[in-house]
Image (cartoon, rainbow, N blue to C red; front, side, top):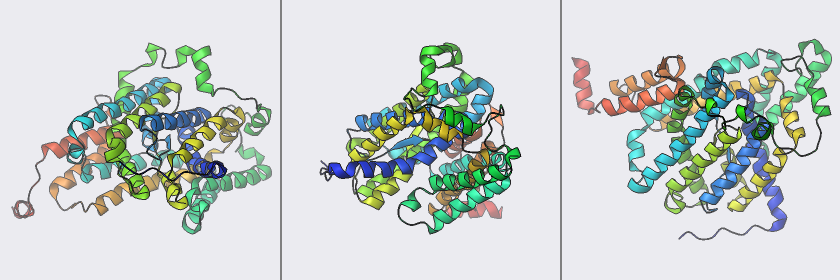
Length: 430
């Protein structure tokens, strides 16, 4: 039995909760902006998903769930072929994959995960997430390269030199800096159309005309007005979309495990023992399925908010729960969604240049920190195959991208036997 958390005075709940909101906000709205989903809906589903996660885990884990970056490329690819609703169907099933694995873990324990997903598989798969999105970052940045480069520089400087809270929210501050730069550029060169949508309409004018009156996010209103455009319509479920998106869960579950261990180290608690990895996985999985059903991207535990826990030293999950309630309230005001929609494409391009590169770098770090020996032929084969399958666009049985790379890595890891160093040396000499 773990000791109770320190109580938090009522006077501190709001400012502490707002810090968590600032930490998750930039990354959570970035995913829908890149995938074509509705930002207000993503905020709504992240808040509801976090509260659901807190309920399932008994309010023991101070984790906030926001939009998952791992699903960006699969959602974009599935949306192009099967429509947005089809891609969301794949995300819904991805959440159920969490639940299935959680039930297995509850019965047999967590040991088999390391055998199924060793660093030699996980590392290159994470690399394909970032590398596979390089083209998206390029296309967004070249919409107006000076704005993209200014935004990139702002994020770099804030990340490197920032102190205190600024260090926690470099993405949000970078977006604000790039937005201000774009406003100046737009005032001097309005012909660039930085604040026009694809139909040539002024986003700033649309923001001005958007009411403050609370309303359900756009996708949620379809359940009442156009249910045929949602997952309530069986025609929007496609096996191909499911096969493109759902396998990503095999990778994000490893990310989930890492986040749970990190939160445990930060708070000095063993969450694998209580409430148990199976309960945190079920909470994350059901939150992702619910998010997809309501029109948002899948959720994942956020490292940004772990940084806030470390910074403040306040670990009581009630602070995260307050943050979720605040985000829920913000999502119900159309003005917030309209403001997010005005962020120019090159501003997001500058953000993604660094962000997607850092995702790939995390994969490299995984290989380095776990000391994966790439002079070993077996390891070299697995890493090489995962990388090419993951970023080449190759499609096999409706599988492509990171999902295909992940499955290829898992299969090769099981098929190719490990050899002792002496056996490897003898093979090379022959």
